[in-house]
Length: 203
Image 1 (tube, rainbow, N blue to C red):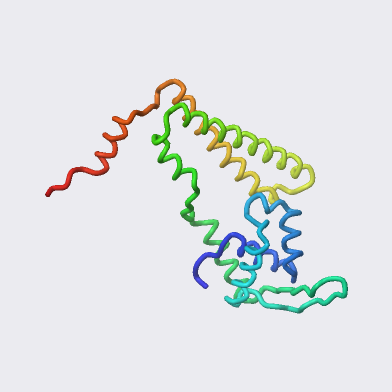
Image 2 (tube, rainbow, N blue to C red):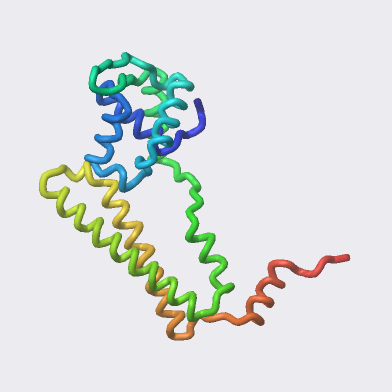
C-alpha cells in the first residue's frame, strides 16, 4: 500500500504497536488521550470502516475473538509486519513532506465579496469569537496536561495552538481593515477583477 492512509487509520496502526486491542479499547484510549481533538473518532461507522480497510490491505490481522456471556464477542486485532513497516514509512513521509489539504474556510473566504461588507464583517467576527474560544480551550488543555505529562505527549496541542493563533491574528487584521475601509468592494470592482481573470477571447 503506497498511498498515505487517513489520519484515523494511521493512529489505529500506532495504537496496535503498543499492544493487541479490540476496537472499543482503541476508541477509549484515543478519547482518554485527547486524540479526538485532532481527528474524528466519534463516528463508530468510520472507525470500523478504517479497521476493515487495514485488515483488507494486510496491515492488521485478527488475533482472537474474546467471548463473554454479558456482551457480544470482541475481535482483538494485531499489527502485521507489513503494517509496522508501512506505519514507519508513512510516519517519515508525513513528518518531512507537507500534504495538500483542502479545508472549507479558504474556499469560503475566496467568495467573501459575494456578501455585502457589513454581513461579511459580522460573520467573520463570529468566527473570531469561536477561534478565541478554541485557543483558550487549547491553552487550558496544555496547562492541565503540562502538570503531569511530558511535553512529547502534548506536541499536537502545541501545533493546534500555533495554527489557531495564526488564523486568529490574520482574521483580526482582516476585520480591522474591513472596519477601517482599507479593504472594501463593490459590484463594479468585482466585475473588473473577474474580467482580469477572464480576458476577451482572441476570436
